Every structure is written in C-alpha cells, then in structure tokens.
Length: 359
Image (cartoon, rainbow, N blue to C red):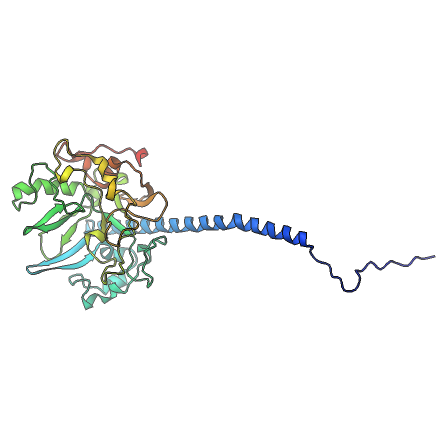
C-alpha cells in the first residue's frame, strides 16, 4: 500500500529567516571586513595622491629642461621690472615654462612686460594649471584658481635693494651674505662685491632677475650643474607657495621670493662666512628645517613643505624624482642645493661630494 507523503511545510504564519544569533554573527563579520577595508582604501588614496605629486614634479622638471633646451638657460625664479620710482612684479618660472607644459594657449594671452595685476594679464589671475597643484596640499584655493604647490631651488637666498645698492645677496631673513668672509657685503663697489656674488651664484640654481635692465641678471643652464645633475635639486614641494586668501594677487605668477623658490638655511654665523664660522649642518635646522613651516601663514615659509608624512618630493636636475626625508643631514641638504658647491673658491664654503646613499 502506497504511503502518503508527509507535508513538511512550516506552519501557517511562520516564515523562514535569520535567527537573532545568526544576524549578530553576520553583522560582526561585515563590521570586521569594513574595519579592514577602510584603512586600506585610505592608504590607497594616499598612495594615489603621492603618485600624482610625483607625476606633477616630473612634468615640471621636463618643462624646465625644455626651457633650458630652447632658451639655452633656466628661467628666473621671479622676474621684476625696476623703474626709477617703482618696482613692478612681472612673473615667475611657472609662467616662463607654460609653453613647455602644454599651456601655450594661456601663455599666448599674457604680456610679460606688464605687471601681473595689469588688466592685460587677467588670464593669469583666473587660471589653474593642474600640474602645479599637489592633491594633498591642504591650502588649495577652494575656487581652484592660481594654486601652486611647488618651488624652484633658490640656494642660500635671493637679492634685494639695500641702502640704495641693488642686487644685494641676502638669506631668507634678509641678513646680508658676506660669503667671502671679508667683513663687507653689498658695498656697491664691483671689486669688493664681485666675489660675494660669484659665490652666491655657485650656491644656488634659480635667481630673481630684472627684465628691463641688467641690474639683477644671473642664471644657470643645466650644463652649469657641475656637482652632478642627479645630486642637485631642481624643484620641490612647498605648500606655502602660490595662493594666499589674504593676497589678491598671490598665485603661481607672483615673483615674491618667498612664494616662487625655496632656500636652505644660511650656513654662516650672522651671515659672515669666515673660516670657523661655516656650519652646513644648520642648513636643515630650526625655521629652515624641511616641513617646519606647514602651519605657518601662506607666503611666510620659503622652504620645502609638504603634507606627505616624513618629508617632501624633490625633482633633480637630471629629471629623476625622489622622496627626501625631513631628517636629511644638513650638510647633505646644503650640498644638494648648490650646483657648484664642490668648486667654490673659498675653503670655508667648499662642500664635500655627496654620496647617493646620503639622501
């Protein structure tokens, strides 16, 4: 006799589903997976931003090299026009290399003989060049206009007018640089000042210049880098350059020496480089230490600063890009800034050859 099959369906009113214990277990597994995934995503994003910064630097280094190739020299860090009654800000290296970083159209709209605030240069005040902005630069302009996260290698300082004498080399604190150690600086007498100016040029790669006269006119080409192009800074990060919410004309075209270049610390006591008064370890210390200006006001820290943990990205004169520790030895750091530091005439200022393992 055939048996009837037993109906094993659940009683009416009951539905199959998760028990409370099973639900808690599933939620715990999901929470664990999220706890593992979120930090990994954060690290991946940070790595992507750092990679973008490296790519930007490579493109900028290429633009500088192209400028050197076609113009037969590197651009000025910042360019001014000096008239008898007034000095005008014109532009920076970041403007000079625009044709070499796929921004020829923007460059063609500018009048390089007019100040950046002139109506003829309105295009520069409303422009944003993507490769000039590091994605981890927390000080970016929310309107995405005029940002700059990079600065060229200015060596030990820049030049100013002092007591009616023009083209006086000073450090970032405007201390006169007596690089030959003779107790004088910027006298206005060529025979007295020429050695100071020669040493100043040997210790830096980019300089301020005047466009309408020869009062301040000095430059290097990549062929002048005699300490080794793989061991000389070309351009690096500084998130305190460019845009300033308190400066209407502070952007990547502003030739203010605090915004367009970075400088290593003055290695000489009180600016006087006599024998016994030169200490290159000071180049990466105090207010000149890499990343020491991260929370200082915009335009007030002309040193390498980045929001990458532990250091900054640097592009070198041979085009390679490398991460530089903020704890790099000061003497190595100073040597990497100078294109001819091993060849200077003054024994007290002469630098040692840098080993590739040192940075």
